[in-house]
Image (cartoon, rainbow, N blue to C red; front, side):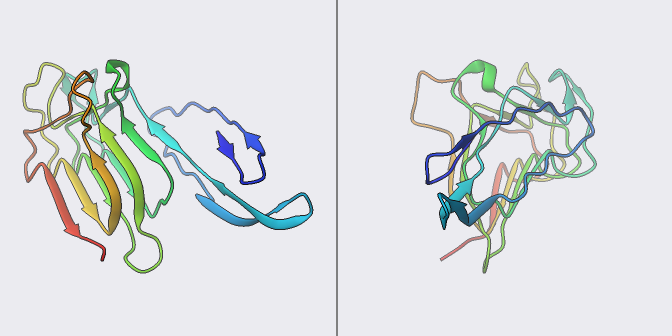
Length: 173
């Protein structure tokens, strides 16, 4: 669902079948014509929930060639997982990172990311099913939330990966 600053709302639903790639463009747009003026803005919200990424049914490795989830230069709200058990992603068995947040330090950092309730580097039964690098790799990103303070929600686990559970390689001022 996209809502602009002038109150216009648009919704688009689509299904993605493997091995297709999700590409949202433009991710953000300003100076959209609203009521005859160029004073509007639009943004995109993305929710990635309830998926097996890099594995089949959370029990057998079925690796992606690179990262399980790759977010590149996105500045709007992205939710990966959630507090409901049905929102949990199993992000395990990938050839690189489970999740890679890859921003640009000068023009377009990755911002406003929420990661909660996922199994990263583990199977459904919590046995190791490692991603071959980090569970979560972060580069030039800000406002990244990993986990929540909701103790009644489904818990997030990051374990069993070949490298560190979380690697914040390059930050922002």
